[in-house]
Image (cartoon, rainbow, N blue to C red; front, side, top):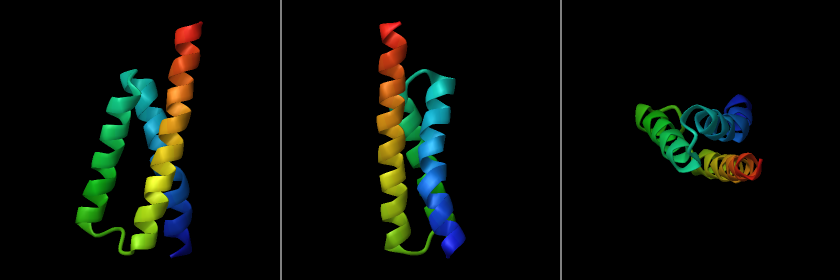
Length: 76
């Protein structure tokens, strides 16, 4: 359970940032990340509401960072 919590804290946010770098759009990156998280929930890899909340928090932080990253790139 501890491993799932640690991974839920970092992986969704990193996915948003990675997909933002690949697709050059943070909204598209968020949608792809949410789709991957939904697929893992459907497959049965996350079992508790606590993990859903941590995933959502990580997605939010990743989206915030990706938005900042995109804004800095536009300013240059």
